[in-house]
Length: 540
Image 1: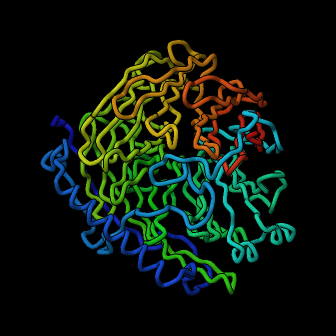
Image 2 (image 1 turned 90 degrees about the horizontal axis):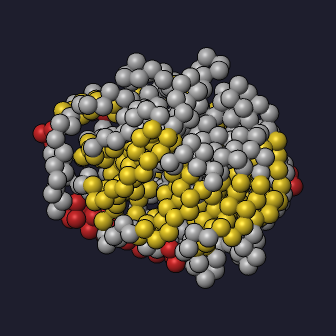
């Protein structure tokens, strides 16, 4: 087993109660109705899964030992004695509710698509306004798509016609123009008035996986004197909580949030990374009474900060991934960490590469979680190597790596190459496949999509893209389990590929650079461009 030398983490943990966050009227917690037998069986299954996991974890030796990690907690009482895990389905409602859909960050699609014609067709389009950073959507810019429960639908401030729509499914898109827009999935009709935070949003909005009417959204630029993370009630669009990104506890003063959170529906906890270099564990203390139409949140916030020897760069731009009780994230210096969700103790670090903003994806193989990740060309200069890696999720051992020459534009308006798109973890007929999309491969305006066998790293196919992409590809499947990939590019092409061969089956031209990442619900895809337009696309 390889050991990592010269890596030291200085760890601090603090807790803030309520953190200046407002809350609405207090109400009784509502629990989705289930039969007693189902609840008992689900709890038994979760307990067995956790027991097996603990036994496996105890047999593993992390590749960086604890004596290489200096850490402390401030204060000691800040960590709750409540033990929590992410087990079972992430969501209690249908949809794609956070960036890449699950704690494994492996699924931006819900349901199946027909794909008889193997074509993409525009269903609707909506033009946003513009701010200093533009309009439409930027990186990562994935919409949330949610099919609301009947009871919740009736108490929200959506138009009356949608309260009566049986299969009403709502698209939530956070735009570069600082507004959060709401659309009916199939028609693109606005379902309610936008929420305007008056600051550019570059990341992806998230919706509560319990089906609670809660919206979570970050901020990309400070254009109003405040920068941070917000939680809104979707009953009346009021702001329930603001977490300031400018924090004296952080080692970095930049307070943006590009990453999307994960919400533990069992423990009422949010996990989130900030560009200030802090990892947040937030007890939401949510209270929701659907009968009265009241929801509130009064968060208790625990914050983790760190320093790694040899890596002076702070900032978590990717969305944290979680396996059971292990949080995984990368930073602007290219270090990757595993941190225990319950204790907020670091478990291991992997050797740094270069700035790593693409969200890590997890694939469980033979009972072991493996991380698929890669870096940009940033600190290396205008030319360098984008390194993609497969990492053992319990030990931090690098199982395999690949090096790809990529380029970047430096200066006052840098545009990086390398891996900015999150990888695809194949399913069904693509079960043995992982797919990476690299920007500015070999030349400034080219890209590369490469499919690898997840077990042995063998190249399955590659597509040398005429135009590069930051947009994350999405895998969709037909009823037979055949897999297809949809990929946007920097000149506005949206491509449909055969997931087995990499053949381009159809392309649809949109009106600008596609930096944002798509989300799919059955046979509808939603994506935005830097040209200021949000599109609904029918997968035919």
